[in-house]
Length: 214
Image 1: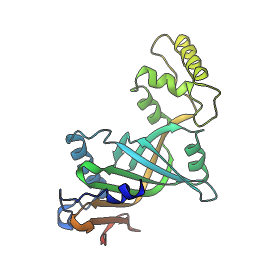
Image 2 (image 1 turned 90 degrees about the vertical axis):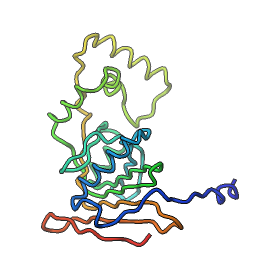
Image 3 (image 1 turned 45 degrees about the vertical axis):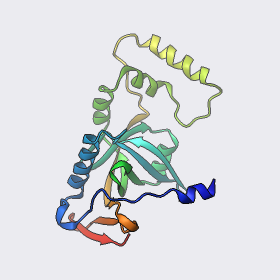
């Protein structure tokens, strides 16, 4: 297996990344790349790896879905009582990774993270499919459960309890916003001489754009 993994290799030839071509605002540059990933019909273009750490610094990572990106940062939703919710409460810093391999691109984000206002979470919750809303109520995310049957029975009980569309948002569920302090855009290049452009937030609120070696 190790020998076959060592032979897995492809050259990246789809494009280049130059300072002159990118937006001076990294959030707008991200929106451009995300739009191109959506146009290319990539699977789950808004999927991102979310890395958090507990109070001891031990790291954790998982994939979640980006649900909003604007001038204030990157928004996703989860259970506040989940492992990641507890980690972000103890250590309010996070890193994101968007990987669009078909376009030979990656974006890394680092920043601080905090809950969004409940009214914003409520507005998004109302747009979710019925089963997703019921799932938010049914799941005690990250807790040990005896069997799948326990989950299914809890879900069905809630489905019967709320036969109409008036499903309440759980108070332990809502959105988080990662406010970026650094964004790095990576474009694969031939011979592993990749393009890497990094934006770092300045003390005046602007952005410093730098090229990194591959």
